[in-house]
Length: 210
Image (cartoon, rainbow, N blue to C red):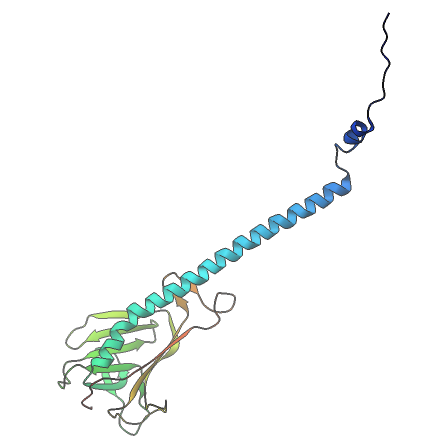
């Protein structure tokens, strides 16, 4: 009769069985590491989305400025006669000489005929900048979502405010926005930007004087 002796199991097998389950400390450590990885991933995702919104708002603001202010820049540079005043498309009053040449409206004549002109004016009630033409009640919105800083100012080449209109005056335009249009992005405390302002300084190329 042949008998087989029972041999003890290798110690490695016993150790492997003992290591098959996690201890409470190991579970807590792994859970903590996993939570940190999840939080880090969520934070990176949120940071990426915010950066994407920031870039889109910058692109939108640049596009809005290019499209909206291109006509204004071209009209100012082509103007033969210009005048700063207050009013709107149906009622415009120029600033008298000897007074600070600052108002909410800008009158631009492409020829020496002052009865034909383009008029840019700020509507402080609707927070918009409009462009219109003499003899017509139609107007075009150039910029919107503006704050109360909306004016045209005549300056010299040093940036000093002028009290009369001369050939070498510079037209300064200041606009502050409360949000972007494309995409609609809020500006202010708790949003992407605390402050957003655009300032343009333009000079007619071939003025004939007022």
